[in-house]
Length: 124
Image (cartoon, rainbow, N blue to C red):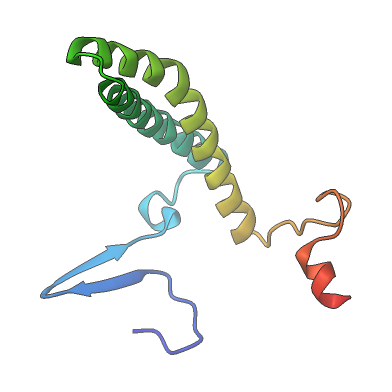
Protein backbone atom coordinates (compact mmCIF):
# COMPACT_ATOMS: atom_id res chain seq x y z
CA UNK A 1 0.00 0.00 0.00
CA UNK A 2 1.33 3.46 -0.80
CA UNK A 3 1.91 5.92 1.99
CA UNK A 4 -0.80 8.54 2.55
CA UNK A 5 -0.28 11.47 0.19
CA UNK A 6 1.85 9.46 -2.24
CA UNK A 7 0.52 8.80 -5.72
CA UNK A 8 -0.02 5.16 -6.56
CA UNK A 9 0.63 3.68 -10.00
CA UNK A 10 -2.24 1.24 -9.49
CA UNK A 11 -5.55 1.38 -7.71
CA UNK A 12 -6.15 -1.82 -5.80
CA UNK A 13 -9.47 -2.89 -4.37
CA UNK A 14 -9.68 -5.87 -2.06
CA UNK A 15 -12.94 -7.77 -2.44
CA UNK A 16 -13.01 -10.75 -0.07
CA UNK A 17 -10.03 -12.88 -0.97
CA UNK A 18 -9.73 -11.60 -4.56
CA UNK A 19 -7.66 -8.55 -5.42
CA UNK A 20 -8.50 -6.64 -8.58
CA UNK A 21 -6.09 -4.08 -9.95
CA UNK A 22 -6.70 -1.37 -12.52
CA UNK A 23 -3.48 -0.83 -14.43
CA UNK A 24 -2.64 2.38 -16.22
CA UNK A 25 -2.60 2.46 -20.02
CA UNK A 26 1.19 2.78 -20.00
CA UNK A 27 1.49 -0.47 -18.04
CA UNK A 28 -0.83 -2.37 -20.37
CA UNK A 29 0.69 -1.19 -23.66
CA UNK A 30 3.90 0.77 -23.01
CA UNK A 31 4.94 0.65 -26.69
CA UNK A 32 1.91 2.66 -27.90
CA UNK A 33 2.25 6.36 -28.60
CA UNK A 34 -0.30 8.90 -27.38
CA UNK A 35 -1.87 9.06 -30.85
CA UNK A 36 -2.23 5.28 -30.95
CA UNK A 37 -3.82 5.26 -27.50
CA UNK A 38 -6.27 7.95 -28.60
CA UNK A 39 -7.13 5.91 -31.71
CA UNK A 40 -7.65 2.77 -29.65
CA UNK A 41 -9.85 4.64 -27.20
CA UNK A 42 -11.88 6.06 -30.10
CA UNK A 43 -12.51 2.55 -31.47
CA UNK A 44 -13.51 1.32 -28.03
CA UNK A 45 -15.89 4.27 -27.81
CA UNK A 46 -17.35 3.40 -31.21
CA UNK A 47 -18.14 -0.13 -30.04
CA UNK A 48 -19.57 0.98 -26.71
CA UNK A 49 -21.62 3.71 -28.40
CA UNK A 50 -23.01 1.29 -30.96
CA UNK A 51 -24.14 -1.18 -28.31
CA UNK A 52 -25.44 1.48 -25.90
CA UNK A 53 -27.43 3.39 -28.53
CA UNK A 54 -28.84 0.14 -29.95
CA UNK A 55 -30.02 -0.93 -26.51
CA UNK A 56 -31.43 2.52 -25.79
CA UNK A 57 -33.26 2.67 -29.12
CA UNK A 58 -34.67 -0.82 -28.65
CA UNK A 59 -35.83 0.04 -25.15
CA UNK A 60 -37.46 3.24 -26.31
CA UNK A 61 -39.27 1.37 -29.05
CA UNK A 62 -40.59 -1.19 -26.59
CA UNK A 63 -41.61 1.55 -24.16
CA UNK A 64 -43.51 3.30 -26.95
CA UNK A 65 -45.53 0.16 -27.59
CA UNK A 66 -43.80 -1.20 -30.72
CA UNK A 67 -43.41 -4.94 -31.13
CA UNK A 68 -39.99 -6.56 -30.68
CA UNK A 69 -38.98 -6.69 -34.36
CA UNK A 70 -39.81 -3.01 -34.93
CA UNK A 71 -38.02 -2.07 -31.71
CA UNK A 72 -34.90 -3.98 -32.77
CA UNK A 73 -35.00 -2.18 -36.14
CA UNK A 74 -35.28 1.18 -34.37
CA UNK A 75 -32.43 0.20 -32.04
CA UNK A 76 -30.22 -0.89 -34.94
CA UNK A 77 -30.91 2.34 -36.81
CA UNK A 78 -30.17 4.49 -33.75
CA UNK A 79 -27.08 2.43 -32.93
CA UNK A 80 -25.57 2.62 -36.41
CA UNK A 81 -26.26 6.32 -36.98
CA UNK A 82 -25.82 7.69 -33.46
CA UNK A 83 -23.56 5.38 -31.49
CA UNK A 84 -20.25 5.34 -33.39
CA UNK A 85 -20.01 9.11 -33.81
CA UNK A 86 -20.82 9.94 -30.22
CA UNK A 87 -18.87 7.04 -28.73
CA UNK A 88 -15.82 7.63 -30.91
CA UNK A 89 -15.66 11.32 -30.08
CA UNK A 90 -16.14 10.70 -26.38
CA UNK A 91 -13.52 7.93 -26.27
CA UNK A 92 -10.94 10.04 -28.13
CA UNK A 93 -11.58 13.13 -26.01
CA UNK A 94 -11.25 11.20 -22.76
CA UNK A 95 -7.97 9.62 -23.91
CA UNK A 96 -6.66 13.02 -25.05
CA UNK A 97 -7.62 14.59 -21.72
CA UNK A 98 -5.82 11.82 -19.83
CA UNK A 99 -2.69 12.33 -21.94
CA UNK A 100 -2.82 16.10 -21.41
CA UNK A 101 -3.24 15.62 -17.67
CA UNK A 102 -0.24 13.25 -17.51
CA UNK A 103 1.95 15.69 -19.43
CA UNK A 104 1.19 18.63 -17.20
CA UNK A 105 -2.14 19.61 -18.66
CA UNK A 106 -3.48 22.74 -20.20
CA UNK A 107 -4.99 25.31 -17.88
CA UNK A 108 -8.09 26.92 -19.29
CA UNK A 109 -7.90 30.69 -19.17
CA UNK A 110 -10.83 33.03 -18.67
CA UNK A 111 -10.73 34.05 -22.33
CA UNK A 112 -10.93 30.43 -23.53
CA UNK A 113 -13.76 29.72 -21.09
CA UNK A 114 -15.73 32.70 -22.38
CA UNK A 115 -15.55 34.71 -19.19
CA UNK A 116 -14.49 34.26 -15.61
CA UNK A 117 -13.56 30.78 -14.43
CA UNK A 118 -14.37 29.36 -11.01
CA UNK A 119 -10.74 29.81 -10.00
CA UNK A 120 -10.89 33.51 -10.89
CA UNK A 121 -14.18 33.86 -8.98
CA UNK A 122 -12.62 32.30 -5.87
CA UNK A 123 -9.62 34.63 -6.05
CA UNK A 124 -11.80 37.75 -6.36
